[in-house]
Amino acid sequence: MRVDVSRVDVWAASIKDRPGTLAEKLKALAQADVDLEFAIARRVKPGKCVVFVTPIKGPRQIRAARKAGFEKTKSLHGIRVATGNKPGFGAELTKRLADAGINLRGLSGAAIGNRAIFHLAFDSSDDANKAKRLLK
Image (cartoon, rainbow, N blue to C red; front, side, top):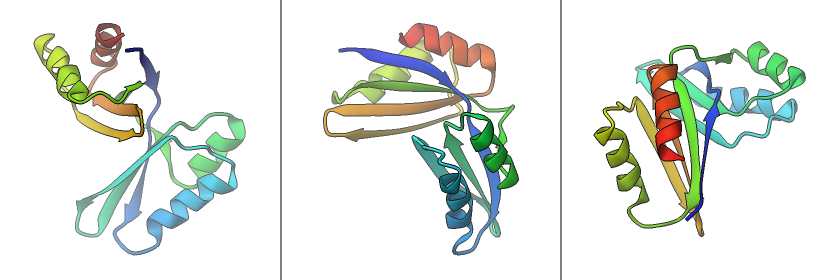
């Protein structure tokens, strides 16, 4: 089974914990023709949320993202793993990282049809690069 592993820049923005704030952020990106592959939002504490997105590419899209309050994260280092949908692949992937002593900061994944995509987050660029090499 083919596995495509690549580094990704993750962009983040803080949002208020109320209806419509996420829609406003995503609309600003859509109006700049940002073609998001991944977005996740979560509450940090009552009243405050954070949204993470990727990719944001090109000068126009970067300007729009910054204007909307997004910044490329410096503390979260991501990789994208795209492969076929195989039961147990997530378990295999996380076991390989654990066996190599690489700690995950976060993982999000989805399978649609015969494709699966995982986004993994690490605390350091070194760990992300090690994981990328290990998983290729």
